[in-house]
Length: 410
Image 1 (spheres, rainbow, N blue to C red):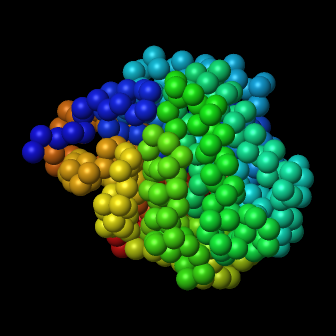
Image 2 (cartoon, rainbow, N blue to C red):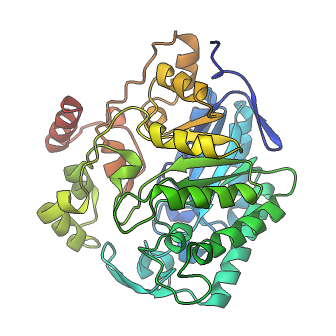
């Protein structure tokens, strides 16, 4: 069977030159919550490396949704800088996408400028901070913020927006019974828990019009007993389909409860602690040192680790599906595309080598990324810009040992 990988694909109103997308893995390169030269250099390098579309990650639709100092927050004043970024991506022949979302309760007053908000109130152990439940009028305003963000994305030159409805961020916090304890029309039954998501998607589709592609990242399961399971998540995916979006990105995991379900493998705890600010995050450094493996348990890595579950969703849905999760070889990417998925997303292979797609095209079907899944890039990205260990000079010996042990145990 001839490979689909390097054939063009029409995603809603836009056409990609091939079936590859750089997934919205957090870069932590938006210093001061605005685009930087590092962000420009990275995404234009990925575009030059042959990808069909590259996705700028984790942009908050308003300031209350910001959970990192290096995270974008969509506002008018940064549009010229974003336009420079999209112009650079387009000049290399790729399309430009941006992920829009809101972190919900996964932040702190020092970062977002207010008491963190979520579907329900409570205490966020990871910050640590108290969180209050959103009021109904605030929910309606947040819906409008998503629409306003889409309009700003158009002005900034983006071809596509990806709405983040997974991984335990705000939309996912409304969907999951683990984080949604509301007694009003936004809580209780699954129909009620989906209400905020559907309001957001209807507003996004209205603002996207006929010139911006819209994809949605959603969970196939949350990854723990009291969260969303596959059956409920499939119901959510069917509702997303009814909203008229152009594709769904199928993922899984929950940042506050099952983070390694998203990425697989072991979190490099020494790396995570090493880069953390000791004054701002001393409690978290201490907690990780004492009970890190209980807080962030290992989930074994295997290539294309979501594929078996994603096939169940493929059989039940009609709209285009984008596969993400553990793609590092031409052979497995071809297998995914031959299984009925229209597009593939990847991140770690493109953190390791921005030319990964071009190298696949130049080689035969046995080509494989040099990424060995030590997850150093993940441990680092919560404090510094995402970077592969082979790009870091003067690596501390303790971190190099952790990397070597992780790669040896794969």
